Amino acid sequence: MELVHCMECFKFVNSSGGPHKFGLTSCEHIFCATCLANEANRKECLVCKTKDFKIMEIGPKMPLELRELFTPMEDTLASSIQLIKEVAKFQAEHARIQIELHKKKAENYEKLKSYAKQEINKKNEYKKQLQSIRNQLKLAQNPSRVALFGAIDVSGSPTHRSRSTSRVSKGNDRHRSQAPQILNRIANLGDFSQLPIGLSTAFSTPNVNFHNPRM
Ligand SMILES: [Zn+2]
Ligand SMILES: [Zn+2]
Image (cartoon, rainbow, N blue to C red; front, side, top):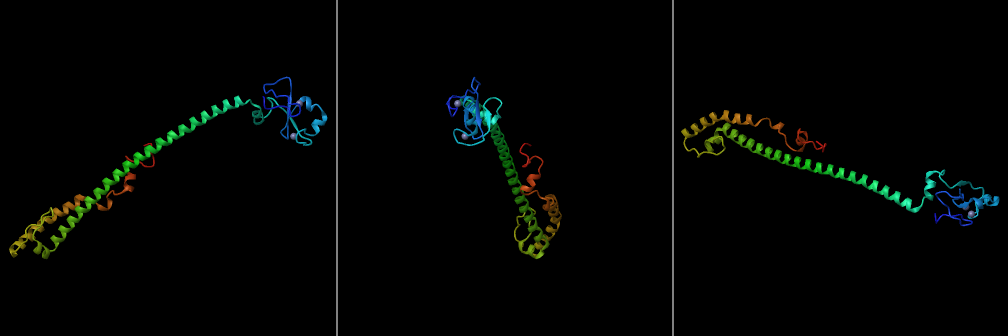
């Protein structure tokens, strides 16, 4: 290793092991065994003058985190590139899964939106029909208004205005006979309080589940 050497005699450390031994001090300085053989050099660090420092032999018996400091740069670079590749692959796979989930959610959202629109249209249609029936019932129950406006058929369009008493009476008879038909129409519309309107209903439909995009 060209950059790591004894700080006293400048002998280079050979990471793959060699005839010379080296020591790493607890004050993080490096000396060769020859320089450390001198007792005076072991009492006080030749670089920072720390006293009573500890020495660890540089070699395969060192803890991993210290051994990595003596790994040749090209080896460190190669293993770093490999690690970067693995990390990139792992994260890219997660990103892909996340995108898939978002796509699925967006699809479900579109389905729900279209379902909600249909339900709102249905509700508006029911409202119109109900209002039309209410109007007809009001007229049928109020003979004086019938007298003014004449007979009205079930479709909601008023007939010609009645001018004689006999025709008014005829008109009233006609409304009495239409009452059961109007009641039948109300019955056919079903229970309005139970109408499936809005998103809350969409969530409960068996074919659309917003919370589980994998359905
Ligand atoms: Zn030395
Ligand atoms: Zn030192």
